[in-house]
Length: 339
Image 1 (tube, rainbow, N blue to C red):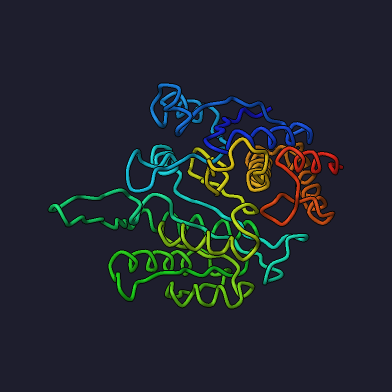
Image 2: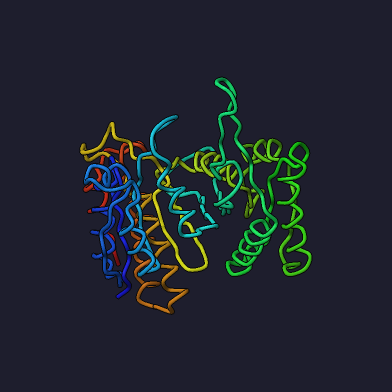
């Protein structure tokens, strides 16, 4: 059994994590759970927004599965997600975006992997108020971090037999920061990964091409802010944030998470879609299978993936996908189809 820290999160988080755990247990996933708090749930318990004991638990196990945590807009505490990435040095965010049978969208055959540098850029948090009416936000880029994420992305592409990697950037305007980013990617490609077809694209043109025909892309590599925006845009190509998983990797730790928000307006109503977090759970199992050579984890991942695909094909969908099932009912539909 592999110890995994479970962070239910806020809003709909406890509902979707409960159902995902139920599915993973039904699929004989080799996981033992250790529950921890973060976000508003932690504040309500009289703790810090990211408690030290939560960090220590992840450091001990090396793995986490996290539901959505609320981040106040414009005021309040810093994002739990950003804090986790910084404190645990989770520098590579991965967002697979794939078309699903039973979820009709404008495009068929979408199969993208978006890699996002997770620790620098405008999300570094270097903001200062210069005068009462002037605020400066600094975009941070270091050659070491840019080269690190480039290596990680090309290695990931090679491991998964991907053929192409495109870097979206704005180096025509931000010549120094984005210039470092594309220079590092170009250098790593030429030196270590000539097997991968490499291209660079100014991000506004890249976004236009992405919504014209997403099937022309294979993998995308982006700095922090661009990766955040483009990964959500790409999710809209396949049905929304409710059908895409996410993961954050470092050299020592990995956290798998729902990429949608905490949706407090529908919390407790049994209408939230648990599929995104379930797909992240499948990513977790596949990671365990690869990194810890666990065939049982791989088998559980395949059973779950086959089951939720069959459920969608059979019309078992939550309201956000045009169906009528609630959170628990969708989970039960998946469990019924486990091979």
